[in-house]
Image (cartoon, rainbow over all chains, first blue to last red; front, side, top):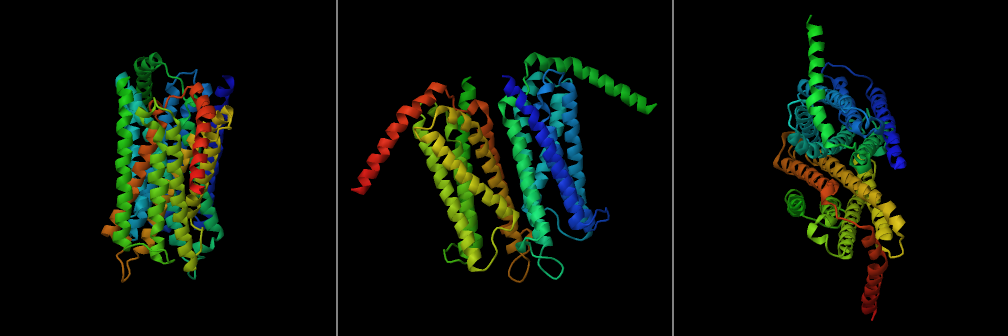
Length: 260
Length: 260
C-alpha cells in the first residue's frame, strides 16, 4: 500500500522537470531562431505566440492539472490546493489569450487573414473550451453556494474536458510548429529548406516531440486511479459550507485593505 | 445501478456512427477534391495516404479499442472479444502500413525527401508504437503460456499506450491535413488560396474537427471506470489455460484444412 502511495511523489517532479525543460527549450528556440520578441505587429510580435501558447496551454496547464495528484496534500485541507489549481489555470488561460492577441495583432497589421487554417480552428477551440471550463470550475467548485449535487454532476465532466483540452492543445501545437516550419524554411536564398532538416528544424521537431511526451505523461497521471485524491462526500460538504465562507471573508478583508 | 450500466450501450453506437461518418467523409472528400486513387507513384497514389491512415489509425483503431466497453458482452466469454479486438487492431495496423507505403512510394518516385516534417515524426512514432503494442498484446494476452503476473503488469501499460497512440494519431492527422491544405491551396492560377477558405478547405478542416471529436469520445469511453469490463482474477486465469488451448487447436485445424 505504501509503495502505491509513494510512487506518485516522483511523478509531479517528473512533470516539473519536463515543464521547465519545455518552457526553457521554447524560449531558447525562439531566441535563437527568431532573434527576440517585440510587441509592434511585426514577426517579432508573432514570436510571442508559440512561446505563450506552449507555456500556457501545455506547461502551466499540465502543472495545474496534476495539483490534486501530490499525495502529501491528501491529508491536508483541499481549499489551498483548489486555489492553487484555479490560480495556475487562470495564469495559463491569461498567457494563452495574450498569445492569441500576439498572432491576431501580427496578422492584422500585415493583412494576413485570421482563423482559416485547421491549426487555428483546433487551437481556438482549445482556448474557448478552456475559458468555459475555468468559469464553470470556478462557479461549481469555488463559489460557496454551489450545491453538492451540481459539484458531483460537474466533476467527471470537468476531469474529461480537462484532458480533452490538453489533447486539443497538443494537436494545435504540433500542427502549429509543423506549419510554421514550412512557412519559414522555404529553401530560398535566405533560408535552408525544411526538407533538408537544418538545426532549427531538428530543434523545433524535437520541441514538438517533447510537447507530445509531456502531454502523454500528464494524461497518464490524470487517468491513473491510484493517484487520485481520496474524496469522502462529507469532506466535500465541509468545503462548501465552512471553508468557502472563510475564503470570501478573507477576500473581502483583502479588497477592503486595498481600497483604503 | 441499471442506469449506469445502460448508458454505455448508446456510446459504441455513437462511435459507430461517427466512424462511418469519418470514413465516408474522408472517401468522399478525397474523391471530390483529388479525383480518385491509383497506385502508380503519382499524386493519385498519395491520395491513399490520408484515407488509409484515418481509416486505420483513427476509425478502426477507435472501434477496436472500445470492444470491451459493450456491456452485453460482459457476461459472455472474453475470448471472442479478445479475438475481435486483436483482429480489428491488426486490420487497422495493416491499413496504416499500406497508408505509409502509399506516401513513401509517391515521395520516392517524385524525389521528395521522407521523414523530415514534425507530422511525419509524430505519425511514424504512432505506427511504430502501434506495431509494438499489437505484438506485445498478442504475446501477453493471447498466447496461452503467458503468465498471469505478466498479464497483470502489462494491462495498465497496454491501456495507457493504447490511448496515447490514439492521441498521437489525432495529432498526426491534424498536422497532416493542415500541411496538405497549405501545399495544395496555394492561391496560384490553378487553385484557390487556403486563406480564402474555399469549400475543399472547409471540408478538410471539418474532417479534422470530426477526427478530434471522434478521438475525444473514444478516450472518454476508455477512461470511464463504470464502462470497464468487470475482471475477476479467476476468470483471467481460466482464459489463459483452457480457452487459449482450444484456440490453438482451432487454428491448427483451420490451417491443416487449408494445406490439404
